[in-house]
Length: 76
Image (tube, rainbow, N blue to C red; front, top):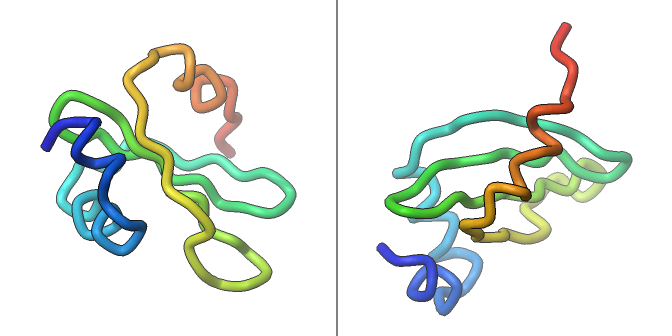
């Protein structure tokens, strides 16, 4: 799976692909739990809406700068 092909998929198809990836990390903001996965040659984030109890959006990327928020996340 390439990033461009992944981006062309609808959100349900993207979710199917992500579950076959490797889970790397999780972070949260006021509205979402954001899960980070590694796929073939890119990363994908799943934004899970806490209030509505469903996936709000999926974001695929290659830029390593998008990983910084996960490095700054504190674990207890």
